[in-house]
Amino acid sequence: MRKILVRMDAALERQDLVEISQLDTGFHDRIYQASRHDRLYRSRADLRSQVTLFLISRNTYAVTSRVSDTTLLVRLTDDHLLGAYERLRDAMILGSPNGI
Image (cartoon, helix red, strand yellow):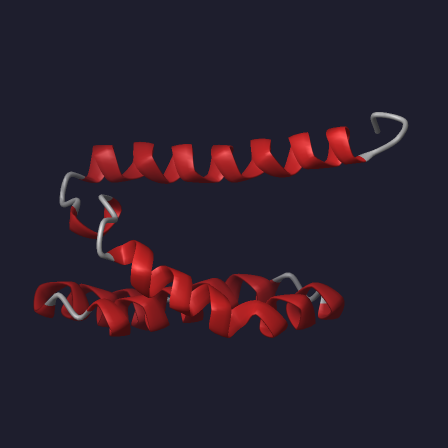
């Protein structure tokens, strides 16, 4: 993951949105691989190309790709993770007939 982050820094310097998106996808691939959850990883693999395409489009406007303030970046990352958790939690609660 450190190697990917180093490559991302270089891609950010060049403003290479395609490479940033590919590296971002690779970074998240490592997280899924580390889970050692084969079904989760296969599900992710099925969506990988769509996610990469989405990231290329989104990275044009992403704030975090241009943040050099570490404190702000940590806050934005926390907000990103908390938001993802809350959306998943809400989908599970609302999607369940018993609210579980």
